[in-house]
Image: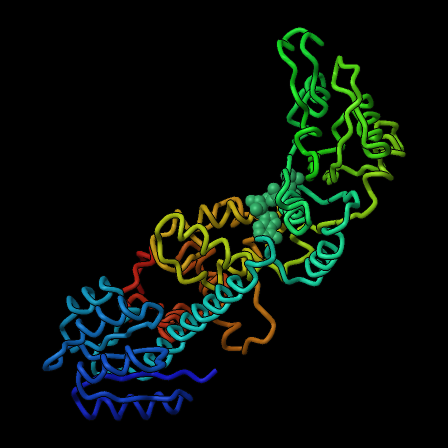
Length: 462
Ligand SMILES: Nc1ncnc2c1ncn2[C@@H]1O[C@H](COP(=O)(O)OP(=O)(O)OP(=O)(O)O)[C@@H](O)[C@H]1O
Ligand SMILES: [Mg+2]
């Protein structure tokens, strides 16, 4: 992707100097000689980055910065400051500038800074693209996914939802079984009729039977009045029996009869009731094993398992991560009234590397917490819960395939520095390079404190 950079400066030399340097780096450059013209371009054409002088006659650089960050958030602004005006730079950073450069300009630093700012920009654009994709996919019953595994699930869903077939949904905790059960009902002709959920594991064995089938007055202590059961309530609709692996034999027999004959009696009742109910069940247990061990009826199993929808664990469909991450960030940003533009590459690689034993539920919680915790507009590593960060082995360095030697070297240096808590002497020692070399590299990356004013906890000096 070719980026467009807008340079605003009233000094002609600076404009043309920047243009030459930036074009050499392969960017398209637009020039503006004053703040008013610059602002007009920044707000009305496709610009990916703004570099603006601060002190200009008429509309000042501060004004440009203020209006671009409020009216076109997502376009980074780098400000240029004259020598000895650090306060202005600090003020600009506070107002949302991406970074600053002091005149006379160091072109290497400019080049690095622009590259980093645009990487950030690209990330924001990707995030927006994903947000648009989520909008388009909302129609599929709030289930997010585009991995081959999920597309297969959607296919089966579309095919069986309109039928009356019993569906058994299997998969680990948090993979989205309940969402699928909801979709089965909503995509069926039974949609206007009741959808009744029963969480079998949450009900004591003694209560479960009367919950499902109802009871007559006086049928047991505490049965002070006749009560209708969930099967009755679900008549002409769908009943969702969650955690079906937890029910006892007596209830299993009764459910079997409903499936075979559509008939049952209330607890303590004589009257036989007839219902038309579609039965959807879910479990994270291995029912075949339960059968082998004599805890689950095989005949019931076959009745429930007419169609099986298995939802694979998240770690086996990581293609779903980008969309899910974007969707959850959007959801929680809205809920918390925050503007979040995306997630940076380090945090993203941690989310990709993690195993997600709690599946989508855990990912959702993790992003809720990150959105709540973050003080910026982009989620970073620091915003992720410690348990997730710890789950990705911090003693190893991950470098994506496709980076250049220089980028790999930079990653190795920065990650070692971070593992040494910013101590440069130790970092140089671990890497087997001299301190001067390390400083020079960090300077190139725009990370050296002498160059950028970064405070990194290394107090020993050079
Ligand atoms: N594909 C998905 N897209 C969007 N949200 C999802 C998806 N899968 C799961 N979720 C969300 O993750 C959370 C857990 O999903 P759900 O309750 O359906 O899981 P489950 O498989 O029923 O888990 P359990 O076995 O623990 O009951 C819910 O908040 C749900 O909305
Ligand atoms: Mg569930």
